[in-house]
Structure formats: structure tokens, C-alpha cells
Length: 137
Image (cartoon, rainbow, N blue to C red; front, side, top):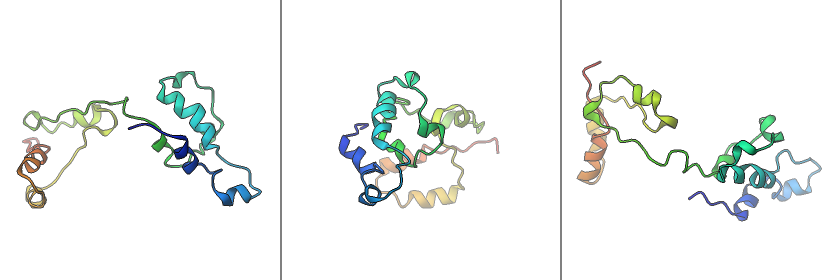
């Protein structure tokens, strides 16, 4: 996970397209340069040492460029939700980084109906534990 090859870079590069190579339009974004100078710095933990990037400054980074970046080191552990401790205060949802804990509200009959579609009692038990019945609401 998190390993990007030069083949990946060429596949995502806007300069790799034959149509663009043959056009007279200047490239808007050089994905190879972005990979070499920005993504590799992030992946080595050297992002604080980066110079200003022209594409970043102009907000022209295409959607999906994050697919080339390794985010696994940012939050290597996922917190455990303990439904028996839940009061419905939502502090966990607002305090936990990058949506590691998502708020889920569902009526109990709908939840039970959806759980019937799941194979395996261990999976059903795990999924059921992701929900809490609180007295707050």
C-alpha cells in the first residue's frame, strides 16, 4: 500500500495522452514533476521543506491526484467504538481526525432489516456493535 511507480505516474499524466502531445496547448499540470517534487516529499515526511508549488498556488491540481499519495502514516490506528459508553454527545465524531468515527443514525427496524442481508453471525454482531441506543434523544 502506498507505493507509486513511474508507470502509475505516466498513466495519470496529462502529458502521456497522445491527444495532448499532438496539441498546441501548453500542459496545465506536470504530473511527473508533481510526483517527483511534491508527493515524494510528502511520502518521506519532508513536506515542511517544500518550496511553493505553482500548481498548488493556482488550485489546478486535478481530482484524484491524492491517489498517488500514501496516507497510511497519518492515522495508522482506527479508534474502537464502545457502544456501551455512548451517550450520544457526538464528541467522538467532532474530535476524531478525518472521519475515523462517523455518526450514523438509523431507525432500529431499518437496521435490523439491513442486518438480515448480511451473511455470517460474527459480521452481524460486529455491525450491530457499531450502533448505540442512547437515552439522550
